[in-house]
Image 1 (tube, rainbow over the protein chains, first blue to last red):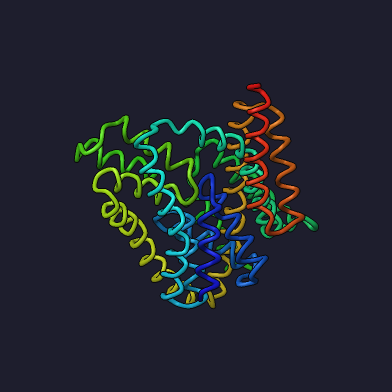
Image 2: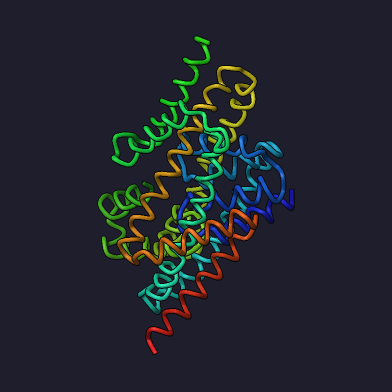
Length: 177
Length: 157
């Protein structure tokens, strides 16, 4: 339980650049370093976190905590995740009273933006491999994935309807097989 | 999404913050670590009522999703033994891959517009390092922050 707290504390400290960057660090810590989950379980959790209200990273963290230790685990993971940002925000709130422009941090952030995109790209590659198997591509899945990407890109589809649509499609195929 | 929500409530309905103050807080929230929703809540809470406000705002943001997830996780543990549910999540996996791919495409386009080809190239290098050295992403982030600081200094001198 203490390791759970420390792990999510670490994640909270390093998740710069929004929910998907956080998903990459969570994946790295829980799937590869601690072996708490398989990649396929992690992808399920990501799908559920996407569909439930609330910030993506918080949802995924409390789900993982709950899966490992029930509701106490969920509380521990959530508090681990939010402790560093809360403390840092407190410090910043006091500091920015004196110095209102956040140009320095903005400069660093635009500098690490490529690295953040790289982080999210690694999750994209892992999830792609899981969904369509990059070594032996399953062409119907590849086609569906491309279709969904185009739909999302041109804002014809929201994330929730993409998940529901493709999930229900698989359920129908399963029934008729 | 939550930012728009906060803006509506605090700026337009409650008139506790001006539009400009809100934008300022959001830009700080986006440039510090942690979920943006938590950061924004913390800063707005602090702005209105000091550290007590901060605490209340953070807890208020974190607790509802926590409760929802605990319930969802319970239901899911039971559902997941059903073959149809497993089929649903095989489909959901494809959608999740598409969602994350789309995020990468969107961000790459914006960084390409702001910083040019070199930034996309650096992103690809970062991705390769993180794929081959598991657990390295915090170091890659720190490294690229240092790199960009040095590079910026170099240009100024």
